[in-house]
Image 1 (cartoon, one colour):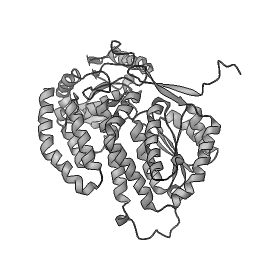
Image 2: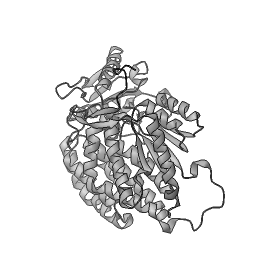
Image 3: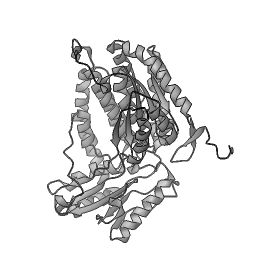
Image 4: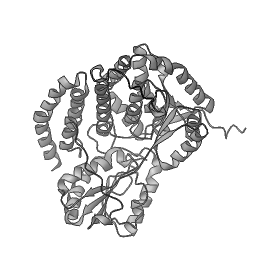
Length: 459
């Protein structure tokens, strides 16, 4: 075989902001993927035979480690994915803390049933070897949230991580493996598969007991085809970008901040891309005035800063498709109110936060994934003009969520990051119930002052 055509056995992982080499990640061969499944198959029965309390202690150790090193974890995620420090805190640390603490609360011995049901359990509820496919964003959240319940149930996990965030995912996996080792358990209960599509197909066909896939519909087809060879059941989480709807009864000034949080987090590259904002005509002009004032003040720069609103796109290859969508929209009557251009002065992967108004269904931005920091606003008169049913109201579950909704995140400020960092420790540390009063105190007293200062800063 021609050596120039041979696939290299390592991938270079680079910082999207600076282009600097972060490290090298191996491209695993099919034999290496099969060996990982065999190792997991050998170790899993002993792990499943342990008392559930011992597995729970490991998960508590993982949560403690996340909370103790949350600032460092945010920096690792920012280096690799381009999400800002504030994005990492809001979309990575806090959801991981919430998920792990809820899981541990449900698994406490005092709430476990006295005996297991005698009814036979289906294949999906039995512990075994679980294969996970994670998308190319939120590397900490998309790794820890699915594998935590699997480990608690007695399963071993083999995770295929996206090559776009493989460098950070390997470090986050080492966090879990270190905690396993400290408690006397094999590190190989959690293993990573790195590489491109071929590595993922090798995992799907290697015979794990079941597979969970999160990603695009295109990639899911290759996973399904590979898994069919061994009749491995697959559950899918296909990325769908649900629109944001501001109805006639909504306050447009209050709706701008949540919309910006959905769109400008990680420069519009989460959960399938930046959603289209549909605003009722009665609120349309007022919404645009408020959005224009805020978006024009967003800071673009290094994601490692706690006062930056938008970081880079994860690859420079996403800028040309973004410009094509914007050019198409403008040629069909849309207006660029803010931004709309690349920022080569900052680096090859930066694109200015953009506000696009007058969008309609004839434009490509409503038909293709909008992977970039672009708020595209479309006016509407009646709900039946929308492309689908409006989403249901979101549930406000915990005090930390109330605090997050009350604190304006844009433009970003360092005190906001510090507040959320301390609130996460108070909410999700050990003895969650006894420490809930600490978070409630922060919410009642500290939040009022922080909110006043944040509002003053953005006026």
